[in-house]
Image 1 (cartoon, rainbow, N blue to C red):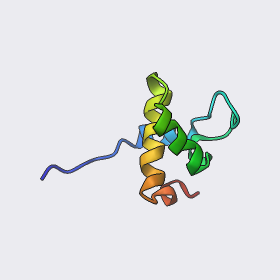
Image 2: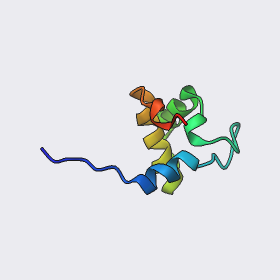
Image 3: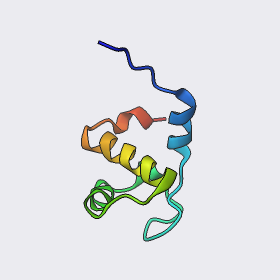
Image 4: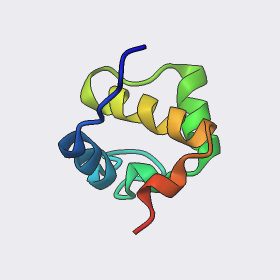
Length: 71
């Protein structure tokens, strides 16, 4: 079994990422309501880095891992 080593830089960048548009513009992605992230999953994530970040946030929220971002 291969070990997984998270990239601390990417994790820090994700923790600071801001929603650039919509109802929650200006809010950190990690602070978006779960229902909003689920809606994106159902509709399709945006293309590019934001889409990848939202997909990761969805996975984190769906698995109850929000505590990873506690300060």
